[in-house]
Image (tube, rainbow, N blue to C red; front, side, top):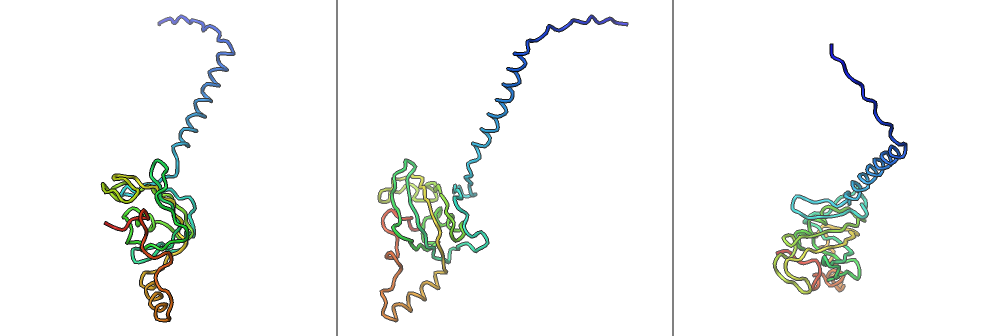
Length: 185
């Protein structure tokens, strides 16, 4: 039979135990705060388009397709915060007629939605400089989708308007101006 000699533990001051418990609680709170700070709500599509839903809009409604013209309010900025274009009024864009990243982002949205897109160069202008946009720029767009209709319906409405002697054309002149969400490659 073996004999075990019991060595009594020295008493620990209550203050040490208190500090240990307080430290563990603080570490737990800090860990939870860091975990939440990492959840920014930014999503990434398989193509690399990053976006954040600021306002979801009518989530029960349809979304635009390549065959539609979207009516949007937008502001385009560079990563340094420089604004390169901003709509003064709702502006129509053919969904398939803008850079791939902008088109992809529009197709994620519902009417009334407001999103922020981060369009990497490969989905934007690439290595080309366009107006105030330097080559290899990541574009940041705040976009509000007001409405969309099929492009064929818009063309019919324009033809009817022209036949009735109206001004015709899209509001705002149709094609995006320099620095507007760029047309496809």
